[in-house]
Length: 216
Image (cartoon, rainbow, N blue to C red):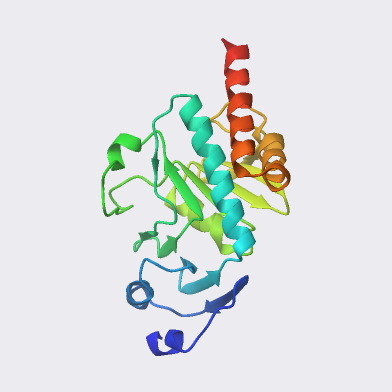
């Protein structure tokens, strides 16, 4: 398997699937690929997916992550960002690398940890997937017990909340209740292209402060 991987180049925007991959092979592949890489992996009951994002995908990931950080900062909610950390559980035979993720309710549990083990440590409270192309991801996030999954696809934001083991589409995020993020996040993402990143982030921060002031 490792020899095959060494011979394979995954072009940006494409993905490669491998079947009948054992957990031991999956672990070896992760080690072989290393942590400093552009590709993302997903593993579900023997099926391994390796995908390489497009630059446009990475830009959206960073910008949406920045918007989330502004929300958390302005609402004075402590958080611990872990980017595309690999989360895996051998008993569930599942593993995933989100485009971005945040520990919020469980921030104090993982703060400063260099290695996480989801058989002991909690899964991230919020995970982001940008331009989703894989059907395996939702089931993996559900199995790992990720409370909230945001999927951004075709310029639309979808908020999924874990209820009784299944992700259900919701209009509002439990982390940011009463904020119309499904409408607002895509709007400011488009604005960043037209007006620039810094100007857009300042405008979004002002909008969040206005919402907070209206509630108080």
